[in-house]
Image 1: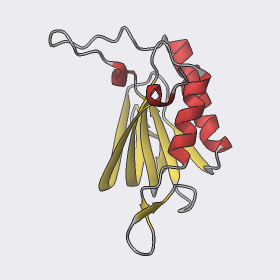
Image 2: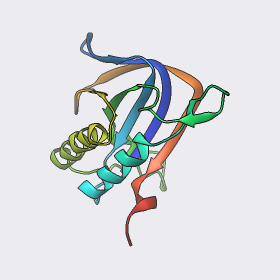
Image 3: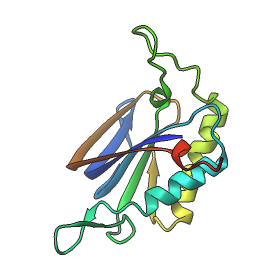
Length: 152
């Protein structure tokens, strides 16, 4: 499971010209689900995300997590994060999880964020053509891959 986590001042997603979700201070997360990902991957990634300390404390140091700043999360499913670009110029998405499995793990990841104490988790529309707007704060962008923490 891969995630691009961006600290934002605001973010929103629209589908067919209609606003679906919007947040203020927090994270906009693009989430890619790979074909071998499991619920354990979603649990690991949600725990790491909820404890990621990239918000500034009173001394200006990135020392606070999303819960400590009462931040919000906008999670967007994005299968293109699973692209294999080793050969040629056209990405292959063969490692992306099938849509049904990917949606189930995306939803589970969002549930796990809440289980880990994040109060406000908003979502895009799985499989839709979404327009995402955000104001990156910093910019601060962190890349996560659950494979780093998988039990061998």
